[in-house]
Image (cartoon, rainbow, N blue to C red; front, side):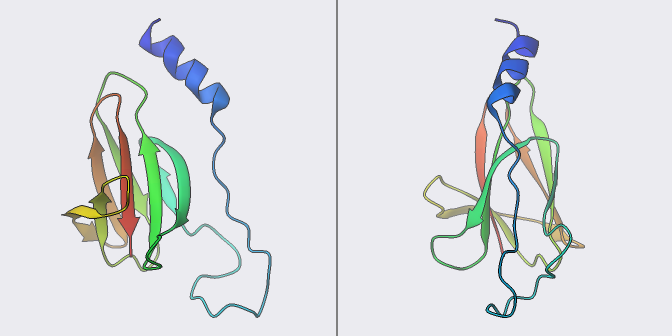
Length: 116
C-alpha cells in the first residue's frame, strides 16, 4: 500500500479531538470558557488529556507517512514542554518561546508531549 493511500485510510478513522466547557462557576481554572486552548500544526493529534500527575496536559501525536514532521504546539501561558515516554515520564525538555514549542517526530512514529 502506498504512503498516500495509507494516510488516507488512517485519516478516515481519526476524529479530531474537541474540548467542551460544560460547567460554569464550579472550577477555578485560568482558561476562558470560549476559544481555543491549544493549536497544533504539522502532525495528527490523536489525543489531548490531563496529565496523570495532575500537572499540565498531555498531547499525543502521530506521523503516518514516511517523512519526519515538525509538530508546532501553541498554548496560551505555556511555560514548559517535554517529550515524554508513553507512561508520561519526561524524557527531554523542548524549548518554549511565546507560548509555542516545536517537537520533531520521525517518520511513522508517535509522540507523547507534556505541556505545563
